[in-house]
Image 1 (tube, rainbow over the protein chains, first blue to last red):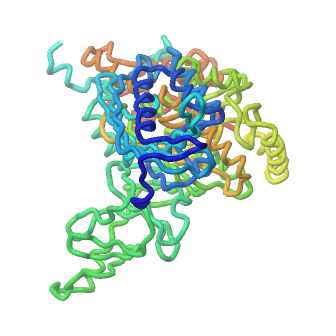
Image 2: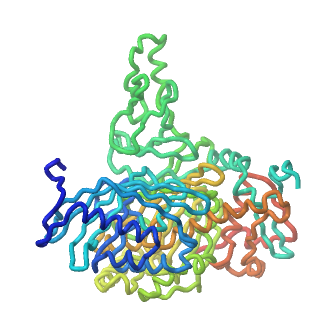
Image 3: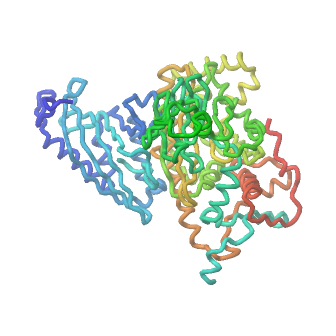
Length: 174
Length: 447
């Protein structure tokens, strides 16, 4: 994308959304996830939204036509949240401690009317079982401004790893 | 106990008692560097190993780079279309020749001294080769080093570092037909897709094998996933699910009460359109393969372990999982999705979603499996050096075995078969008390 595409604010559905708005949205989500408030996290999705984590060999294909790590439709996001709230989600019981840093936030007009695209970088640290793992990558989200604030239509995490290293299974939300 | 004692690998590796009906595995098998080194030689450098699927390199000049048994390899299709496996190491001084992970090229050039090789292994160029006494024999001696053996069954490419290994089909034995059954699921055959799950676990490779052959863990470990299935309208049961030892270390779970199967067994969460497509596909299978074969292929889920590094999950969808031991407590895992070459886009989308929701490090179930065997790897440190206490128990189902009853998937018979075969390969001692029932030890007539 060219420099001309990078902008500090975007007009969507008659509203002005600034980079500050998007940063606040992403930072608030990071706090929600680090606090293990999974109901709060689920509320960030519009009905019918998706959560995707492609595999590390991802070259831009649709997850409907290739393998992936996470390919959740709205029902599966709901199931994932329900699972993570259960004490029988063994992979996250006890919960990991996580700490997320989000940076390089940029916004672009969405392909669909009334949406905008976010690109941002993240670093997430996870402490569990005496181990400390790091995940890095990019967010490529599609969000919709609503009366109740920004909502995800697509939440997509692109990993920067060549492979998921030891301990780095995606048992929590990245 | 002294530290000297606790660091020694105590024998025996397996303790089998047919009077008390117990079977125990020495926990050193999961954590000892000495055992790991013995496995490298006595298992990984001796038998057939799964390298990859032919459909990963569909076109001439396609290649993938992959490490098997710790050895970097180039898995490629040469300009003539032949599947090859080269040691990824320049014959000149040993440099890794290909430093890309995948691609398409006719030649591989070493960046160090610019020696260049065709993908059929022949030398393409050695700069300033006039400096050598006998160019002709140099070119011949400096061809790419091939993996000693390579054979293909139903698109599954196997290699061996042992030139004297018996033919692949002999090694696969009863496992071979289950691989054929996967190929036969669809008239168009099956193919692998991009989107490969590459991940590592902090656990011994044999714990991954055990986990796959262990139906006993399913309900407690995957409680949250079973709950999701129930809510989406599918009953899950442990009834009529059996475990088989197929010989040569291979094993099989046959599961009938374990979720729907895309294009085979419909369930409500797949939707009405998929029900119609499933019925049509079933009718086509019966016509192509006959009622009985179609029944075995479509109505049962299979989890097949091909010793030592291949797991085929023929369940909701089809997954290939490959195990690569890195260290006693560290295993790399690679998983591909296998799909019909020709499939309705909606079925494909449903298949990918359904498979991934269960299988893989981001699914709703596999993370709990990984949690379990990583927890084993940590927990078995507690009894290190504790002699008779330093064993894991795998006795479940022996009572039925002596009665000659087929082992259930929720027993541990498939694991015992695996471990006996492993012990034969690696050694370390097997202590047997009482008489083994021969009918069981020779395995079962699976079909």
